[in-house]
Length: 241
Image (cartoon, rainbow, N blue to C red; front, side):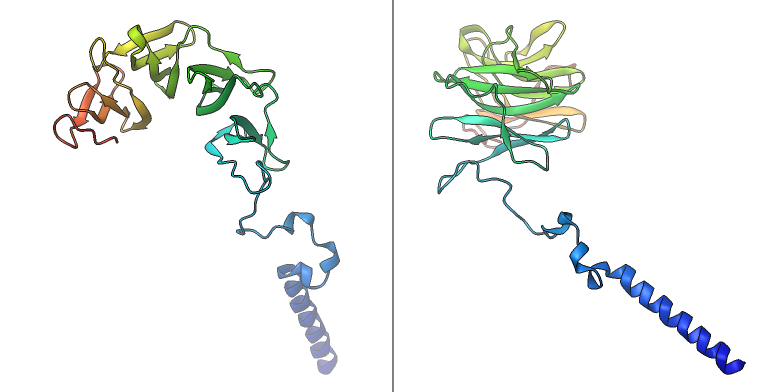
């Protein structure tokens, strides 16, 4: 009886060991059932698509997540950049409404309230601002002039906007009330060219030229006037942050 019970326990133990090994390495016993999901090893880089085929570079830039998809611009020919969309599974696709030879180079993507805002240029290097809801065609925001470098902050879009005499200054955009000039940093007749906006410590930080110190680091809290954080290269020379 004791030998029979010992043999039975040994058989059970061997069975448990076999089951544990199979669970830890299922492909070891059934390699033919390996899922297609594992055809690309985890952690190994791979090319999603050769957008500009042959030996040319597509130069994908401004990668932004919008509605669980990746949007970016990339070259698809020698003459202009296009808007591309990638859903993580299918090949990258070119937005069908972004194929005009006159409007191209989408960039400065900003997502707010589930809407994608972005800048484009035409053949004369004039900038335009668009919004895209994720369906249908993108729509031009018609009450805005040449625009770039937008960022959403405290329920408004802050951006570099062309105003009087083609000056590029710090402005805000509210979908309900339109454009407001926040500050003419460089003074009338000069171009402060604010750009590279980012939010840090509950303020907008950006690069701008006040016409005296050159392009230096500035900040804006949404209430008080913009102020220069530091004249990194003293005098009229620019540090170009």
